[in-house]
Length: 546
Image (cartoon, rainbow, N blue to C red):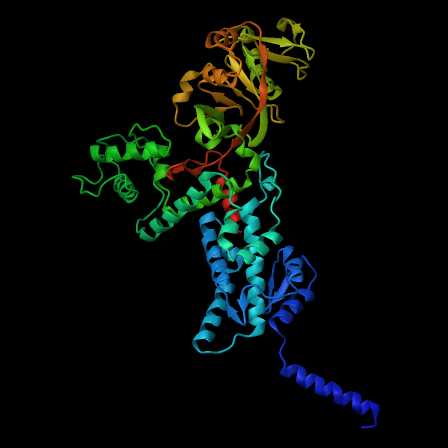
């Protein structure tokens, strides 16, 4: 062929034909898919778009696009382990379908069918599955370490910043592949709280209970509390639910609609387990708790597994004060041991206690209560207009912004302008009680005593304006000041009964965490569920399911 044009055409046709006869390798297929898009974009795999991790490109470039999960066209055990971990993510409260489980399963079924029929797997399919599994690892590892949801974007005043990743996920997958161990490397990303792994097992057991479930979980309501010997149409269903959860043995009552003494014992056990007053009276809170099916409890657990993932590693401090608002409880931990526990009163639903972290740095004995302007405007001033002796009766005084006392009789209380401050003097009637514990924060929230001691006996203790009221403040103060032997119980008591406030700096700053957990598992693996007093669970659950 002397004609150069014909020669060129001939070699083009030959190369095209032979090119088609020699399909691209898995390595070339992976390279082709990745190079088609720029890093951070979606990948087109088997005709479908896949949202990808930013690590996926650099990971395969680093290994010259060599496949990870197969060898010689056959699935490795490592691939089966990765699929298993994706399935197991449901016990972390995550959705396995977020990691393309159904898509991955379809490839596994195809490959296993090919193995059965002794057919080779297509290079394109092998490349697609390789990318899917690697991408699933990166996405799952990120969700396990920092959470799926960005807590800073939640509605309401929740000062929770999304924690930064401390793990190089690129290096983690390389390590997992080199060690041939996916599970252990993913588990290294779990929150370092023992309750996390135990909570996973609770979800596992609830899933089993869900499979056994044949009850009708329609929402039951009671207009008034039910006591022993009362007759109520909801009693049969409530009795069934107590039996289902193991609080009551199966038995045939004389009258199914009568609340008998045997059922009473089961109700008491149920109330004790679920943080309620174990009085055996079936009221609103008891019925709400008994309305929760296994699937509803799994959803509640999922929400709180995510909240645990939001907590930073600094929460593991040797010395730490934790207030679980949903449980109305404060715990003071030292060297991982709980050395002090107390009931607390938290904010009302319209004065919700915020969620944040700060450091306790000082105490104030016999404190003034510097009343917030919102309370002054909405409560104090209207009260003074009705009763000119209100301030005197409440042991309050008016001061200027510089702290100078002002005679209330010289103030025009009908004026819309009020350029003063009101504070309550130290004493037994002071709303802050006899001591407050300060951890400066943007919400002006702190822990303090209260003269209303009887409120701690209530089951629902969401009653404050946002601050945390403590049941045993003197004992707490003694623990915080234990390094100074001069602070004896007698000296603390005297300091709490002065006419002027006394500030005492702590020798070290102690981290304080106000959190909101409506579910957790204790050190024995026992589950604890609490009511969602601020109606915050639904938002998180919706985002987890999105």
